[in-house]
Image (tube, rainbow, N blue to C red; front, side, top):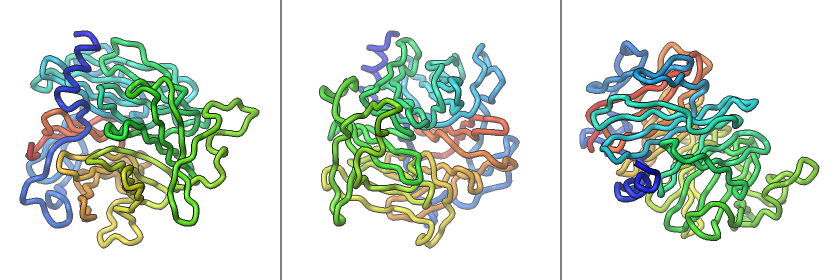
Length: 372
């Protein structure tokens, strides 16, 4: 199967499947499936009816393949394949040219059939985002970081898109209606960026903008030089009235909205591109149930429920419902100094993937009674 066939299948199937299930009608008011049980054999606390397996561990060969799973697994997503299976891609947040992206391929019943690198030689590939046309945008979290567009199967060589700017990239979310890519910046005074391609979905050229605020009014300002030399003004310092966000992290598009997180103030934001409206869905300072701290990667279920991974905190994947109610879904026990990364559902919505990034890096699959 070549990449053209792969992308066609992905578009037919609703493109990228980092979205997934709806919750059962019995979902508790806290936004969870109920209390978490004692840790299972893999150290995960899950609700009743759910089970886990470890699909990959840093430094170990992925079962049935020759690929040694990368260090520091971070952002991830899943993509359907033509045989009824799927691919899970995972960034490697390693610096000094040791970063990149790895993938694990599954057959239609969920057995691992392949694993390999689809991008290498890059720096601190943190988060990123899936595209509606079936590719993975991998973002470098360094001061002059770039965005790489990757073929999840690894057939086509990854493409570096300097048009999306050089800055401390964190995550990317594609708005297929507005035909734009939104990007967060992992800085305590970071911006929210928007890239409008000249010829969507070709990302090779276009206009890079940053959200600005004047007197409470929001607008977008073009960056005059998205790719400055080290002697020139950095991308992030070119617009004086840039709207500042405290540590931009995960981003995800769903239902006409761009959801993104900021770890410095533990908030989950929503931005409506049509109304040009910015809102806060969660803030641990004001939430009646502030269980979510260290907010990081984010994804959405098919009904609009958000799943947010914690960087630190108590190492949980937390469910945040559209009405703002929040509750724990999964917890990694016995690991200190790590973070949860890369949440994404398989195409059927019955399996949730995520990683504990360090000590050691470990990527999990959680299966259970998701309403698919």
